[in-house]
Image (cartoon, rainbow, N blue to C red):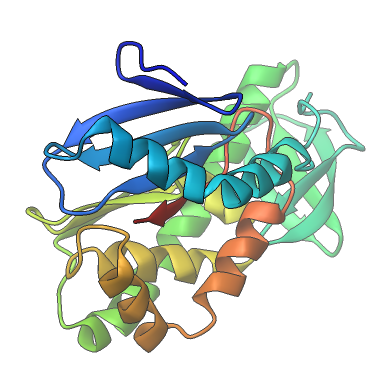
Length: 247
């Protein structure tokens, strides 16, 4: 094992090491291929980091295999007949070209995409993403209102954006949270989990034992919701929420 430019080679696994102003060491396994990253306190020496990684090798290998075996959707071509997910339900896309503005409807097991004649894949994708965004704009505010009194902190602002490595993020100082656009494709339980997860960061910054206990007190089944979200099919360009452990 050797260390080169903030990296460790631990029994065949390349580990990125980043030193931060934190109290606990965090080990993360990142999709899609299972990249391993350690966030370590600045005062921690390499021997202790190496030991922490070795102690968690079985867990790291398990998570890497899970990520590498994860089922992902093939690239969407935005043509009639292919499948898309809406709130965890698989729907069959039907593209209907007609004059007028783009419009999306759910009709039983079909996702109807009304588009102007001659629309291309990019325009259809943008129209569907706008619709997904509108769905989240309706779903998120009631969840924030529900959980603010239970958490005891208010969300000053929230927004939606596409994120490749996270389902959500939180800025404790500003009280702002971000929600990944892809959550409109997941079961509503997954969205609630992410909202609670990010709001819990208003009280606990890191993913340590205190954070896990806080989540247990707020949402007892949060682990099963997280696992269901990460194990569900994903679009090729979107990765799963980081899986991590704290030492």
